Image (cartoon, rainbow, N blue to C red):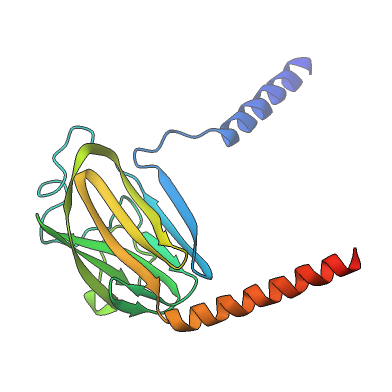
Length: 201
C-alpha cells in the first residue's frame, strides 16, 4: 500500500512539473501589444531563427507569399481604423503576409487570420497591400521580429526585420482630425474630474 501511495505521489509530482515546463519551441510564439492613438495594436506571431541559413531568396523565396513568421499565420489587431502605409483599414483582426523581393516587400493584410502558414492564402481575401523598401541592417537579426515604434502620440511604424533585412510600414489614425477632437474632449473630462476630486478633498 505504501509503495502504491509513493508511486502515486511521484506521478502527481511529475505531472505538476510537466505542466510548468514544455519542450523549447523551434520558433517561439510572441505577442506584442502597444497603445496606439486612442486604442491598441496587438500582434501574435512565430519567431523563426536564421540558424546559419540563407533566408531571403532561398528559405523565403522571392516573389512568393510568406506568412511573415513561422507556423500559424501572423495576426495583427487594430483597435481603431488606421491608415496603413497610406491605405485605410477598418478596426479588426487580419492575417499579415509578405511577398518579398530583393529591394521591396509587399506587405498584405488578409481577412483570413486563422490559417496555418500561407498554404491556403487567398488573394481574394486581401484587404490592402502596400509596397515598402527594404533596408540592409548593420547587424544580423537572428530571430524574426515585429515591433511597433511610435513616432508621436498618434502615429508609429510597424517594423519587420530578420537576418540582414528590415522594412517599415507607417501607421496613422484613419481620421486624424476626429482623433484630435476626441482627445481634446477626453482631456477636458479628465480635468473636470481632477478639479472635482480636489474640491471634495
